[in-house]
Length: 129
Image (cartoon, rainbow, N blue to C red; front, top):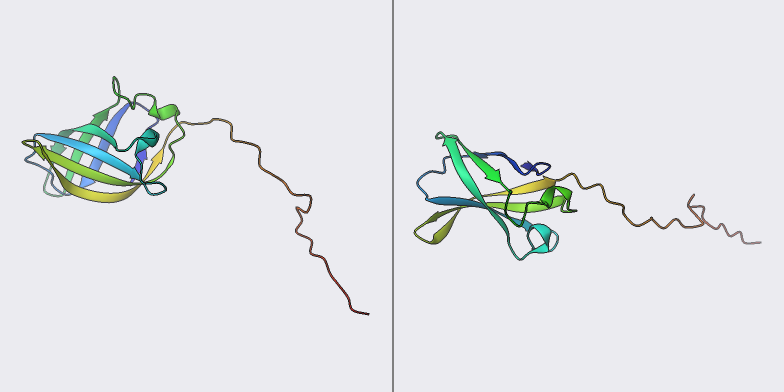
């Protein structure tokens, strides 16, 4: 599953029927450091259920006015575990779990890479005389 967070709103299609809950949320946990988006403890945001059948469910998200509003310009590209959860009467239930990749518009400058003086990887050769 790939999440393209280059805009602040979008749709997510999920395999399976996810119906009967009052609220839904997506929780993204990094596979690198077990933290959520923007290095928070939990990278979770609300989803709105738009439509669905017995085979798929369509959710929408909107980051405007949330702490994730600027996520499109952050360096959060990477691999995450995506947990889709449903809330009924204050108890969150895990509905599905998928490995996911997050893509954003981040184009910041990275530190210059170190280049050794032996970039051609020439090895020393010793001969016995």
